[in-house]
Image (tube, rainbow, N blue to C red; front, side, top):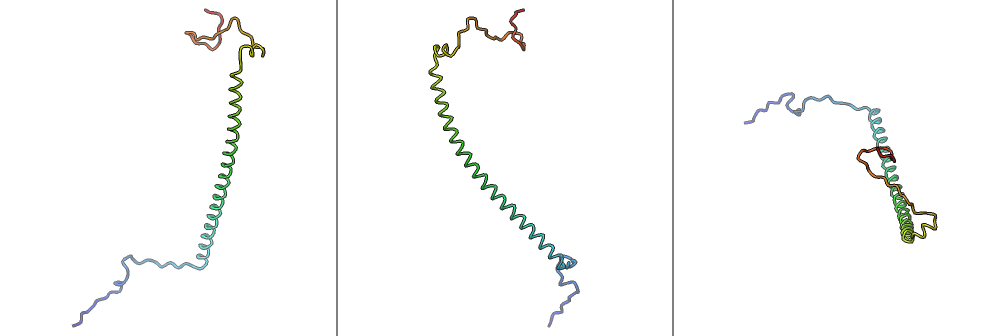
Length: 123
C-alpha cells in the first residue's frame, strides 16, 4: 500500500513569509561599488596620515628629550657655580660691593587689625 501525500501550494515555501524580491540594477551596483571604493581610499589616506603624524611626533619627542638633557647638564653646572659663588660671599665682600649695614632696620609686623598699608603712626 502506498501512502497518499497531500501537498498544498505554499507547503514548500520557507516560513519567513513572502518577501518581495529586490532587483538591483547595474547602475545602482556601480554606484555602490564607487562609494565603497571612495570610503576605502579615504580610510587608507587617513591611516597613512596618522602613521606619518605618529612618526613625526616620535622624532620630535626624541629631539626634545635630547635638548632637555643638554639644558639640564648646563643648568647643573650653573647651579654648581651659583652655590660656589654664594658660599664665597662674606661681610667684607658685601662692603666691597657697596652694601652697608642698616642702623635702624624697619621690620613689618602683623598687627591685630589687618590693613593694606604700612602705617608708621600708631593710633
